[in-house]
Structure formats: C-alpha cells, structure tokens
Length: 278
Image (cartoon, rainbow, N blue to C red; front, side, top):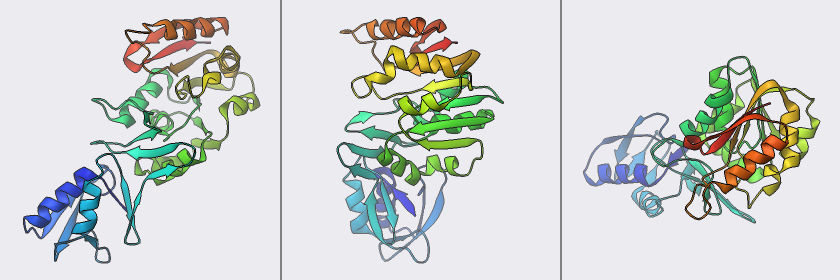
C-alpha cells in the first residue's frame, strides 16, 4: 500500500515531465523516503505497481485529501456517513477532520507532536494512563514512548477507528502490548473502572457542541473517581480564548472541575487545555 497527497503527486509529476528515471518520494505520509522508478511516464514504486500520470494529476487536484493506492486503485481516506470523516495531509503526520472540524492542533506544529505534548504534561514512566477519546491514537502512542506501563485508549466512533487503522502514523497502536484499545462510549466505559485505577488521564473530547456531556460535572466526577490520589488530569478544551467569549468557557470548566473535587486546576494556554490534580 502506498499513500499519496498533493505534495507527493506534484513531486512525481515534476520528475516525470522532467524526463527523470527515478524520484525520491515518501509514500507512507512522511515517515520515510524511497526511490521510485519512472518508466514510460509512469511511476513505479515497485516492479508490480504502476501509477499513471493521469492518476497523479487526479491526486494533485485535491489539496486536502489523502489517497491510498492499493490493487492499482486510488482510495481516498475518507468516510461519509452521518458525518464526513477524513485524514488531512500535512508536511508531517496527518490529522483527523470531522465535518470540517479539525481534531488536532496542526498550525505550525506536527499533529503527532501537538497531541503528544498533552501526554508529556501528565504522563511519567511506569504510569497507568487513561486516554478518554482516542481519535488517531497519537496521545496513547506518546504515552507508550514515555514509558507508561499501561495505556487504555477509548474511541466511540467506528469510522474514526477505521481511518486510524489505515493511518501509518497510528500503526504502533497495533503492536504494543502496553496499549489497550477499547471501542465504546467513554461516558459508559469509565464507570467500569475501579476507583483509583489511573495515575494520569488525558481527556481530549470533541468540542462542546458535539459532546457536551464530556464537559459536565457528572463526567468530571468520574474522572476524579478513577484517578489515584495525587493523580494528574490534562483536559483539552480547544481554543475558547476568542474576543467574543474571552475565557468564560475555561472558567466554567475550571469551576466544574473544582466542584468535582479536583485541586490545583490551572489553564495550560499553549496546549489549549486545563491541568488538574486529584
């Protein structure tokens, strides 16, 4: 399987039109680079794969779309059901977009790194970690890199899980014994955990309008319950610091966390979230 997006296609097209015999491309979304042959104006990543100039030009027309090339066909990494889900390319890792809403911080930073910074805030080696809303699994993967003993990562949406399984940057989720993937509604799943199970929690829910229950006092009390004494929470809130809203959204979330029993609740503006202790 090979992955293409506009930048990759553009590099290949330029090489073909320049009469080159080879071109170096990343065909795994910027994880590595390989040398591809060019024969008769056709890109050949391997001896049995041919990608025509026409196919490359089709990719070039879609600037924010990733294509998986498999069995000589181009498949866009997107799913359209009740909502529209897709992986969006960057110069590094892709990010998840749902009905036009970005699910990662990507401006000026690799989405994998920005997600990992949430884990960096609360996770230490040997910790047991809960990642409440997995998405592409970047937070869970960073927790494993840090040395977490166990990370449970929960995702409700099967379409997101399908795209995650097709994302090469998420591949480490499937061969790491320290990461347990669960498919379910975190609002229900969290009630199955014993009190004081986790050393750290990364709570990165969809925006309030899509999942307001995950910002509510009842759910915050569950987060507090499953954290060990002196455990740490990072709660991503998005970017409510607008001229219209000011910081009222963060203030309200902070007050609910305090009401739920959390201590030392402080904003983490650079990460667009809140840090708190049980």
